[in-house]
Length: 252
Image (cartoon, rainbow, N blue to C red; front, side):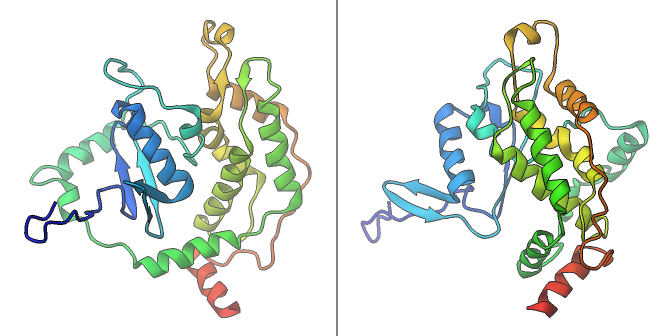
């Protein structure tokens, strides 16, 4: 409330940002998580009946402690399904931990963060990733792999079509980062656990025997055959995502 104008003014909160880091997201209340779900799915936030669009690009990165449960709330399946990937960090290697100590000797690295690239270039890179070629047989492999999660005897609820889309898009991104304009089945295999495991609900009877979602994905990777594929795309290797973006601009 602005006392000078005697009117209510909207002040955007931290959610209306290009990059949102939700630290220990499982400590957020269900109401907060529900609001975040709207932002992630519909790219908008509703405040007092007014809808505000999220900026473009919009990215949510969340962390959670998988061990501690006191004072936490389990993320609903619908919200987990909106996260493209889940990565388990674990402990750093000894060399990495020494580097962490060295980097924080005098100040925290976050204090020296600088802009990596302009927003427009990021949008171009995102557009370039969408141009990375996915052979129909690779797409078929993705669908067969995801579909297999729905009929696995240890799985109560398998991955939805969002899982297929996430694995497809992640494969394109990985190929672009590796300097290719086409996706290989190996790209899909590398990303399968990160893209699918958090979307699976394991049956209680299987959880009792310590069956984990990651184990199920690994088993399905072993049992799902890969057809003979030669996905050479349209131009082979272009050198990286920036080169692909340059090609997209040239073709436009």
